[in-house]
Image 1 (cartoon, helix red, strand yellow):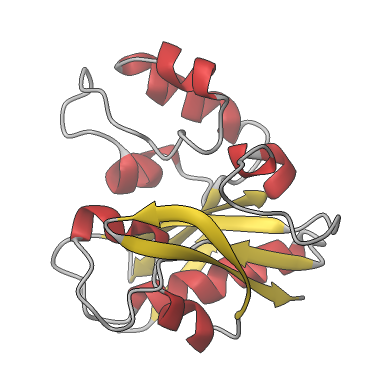
Image 2 (cartoon, rainbow, N blue to C red; image 1 turned 120 degrees about the vertical axis):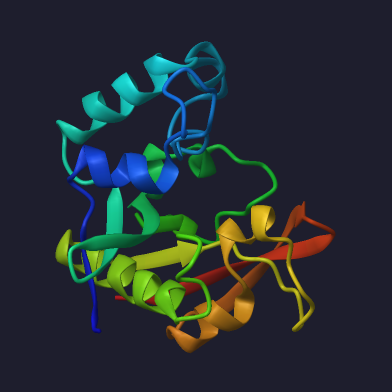
Length: 188
């Protein structure tokens, strides 16, 4: 069955991908890079879902992958200026271009190993392009083929980004799961 990637406008589908199993649980909801640290820490339990609903009123929060009618993947993508990457000291800015960032990709259990992350990354590129982005960046780990722990794999790998036409433009001072993160960029 074909994978279709669409802008993330459905709260229920976003909840399926990044929300908690229990509504009162504290989980990321993919807000940690989208909000200031202070606001992110202040939002707990149900307030995190309410913030996602509020943000959705302004437009899509990324892209979702579907296999038929079933949501199977998520990628967060937004203008870098609207994320904490705009102020992150460990991830460099290589120039003043108003780039977009893709920072989180998740694939539902039972669908991993089907190439969905590749579809998500292509979908993030197309979404950023459709919004007028001049380029898109990602900050994956350079794992050199070594296994990445699934809980830390959300940033993607250098090879996944390379397969999507991204090029390494800088090293970073960020390390995740023991692997250095690199700045990958694709001109649009």
